[in-house]
Image (tube, rainbow, N blue to C red; front, side, top):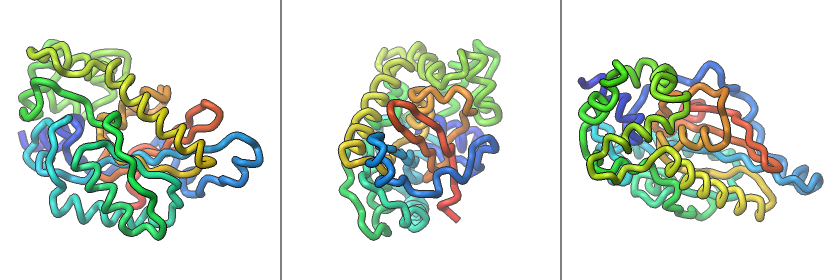
Amino acid sequence: MAAVAAVVVALAGCGTADPVPPEAAPTTAAEAPVDRADSAATGDPVVRVHLVRHGETVQNVKGIVAGWADAPLTPDGLATAALAGKGLAGTAFVAAWSSDLQRTQETAREVLAAHPDPPEVQVDAGLREWWFGGFEGDGAAEVFDPLLAPHGLTADDLHHDLPGVLGQIGDGRVGALADLVAAGDDWGLAETGDQVEERLGAALDRVVEDAVARGGGDVLVVTHGLAILSLLDVVGADGVERSSPSNLSRTALTWQDGTWAVELVDDTGHLT
């Protein structure tokens, strides 16, 4: 049960997963800063969005599903956020964003504390984690075991083979898991995959529009685990294998002229 909670809750937006960099993700493209002068010269601003998952929370440790519910970071969560800040201090962020939940705002403050010229954090509720409705506050296995049972799966399968689970319950997009949660919510409150993508996609549009107005550049966005996976669906990253983002891991997306490219997924190089 403890092993299940450790990573299944990560899928629920509030767990702690072991930091394992994905094999398929490139690891060098996001190291160089965005050349804003070159962007200005070509008339096509380049925007690199650094999606950073919040630090460890009390719910993470207790194995509780928390989408819109909130909790402060643990001491380990704060310490790791500070470490991430040191690792990202050399990135010249032109803007910084977080969801309006406590765990992301605390993380953003800690990350930027080490930055030589930190931008003001813009708070956007659209960057929140999935809304689990009537399942908020329940244990991870308690939520996912009954939902996955008709497919011959358990919550533990989300840990061992997330891509396989997503392929079995849908088309490989993480939105299928949100649909499963929404269909099983007796309160009828949980978001569907389409609702999640519409909300997060609109928030990402605001992030990009703001960065373009600044001439492009690197942008810090502190958000949530499942939100990051849904954003990969939003930008059409069909060839990128989905894995549970570790706390304080970084997923880097680059936008130029309306086209998205995925540079890094669940990268933890800045934590070493």
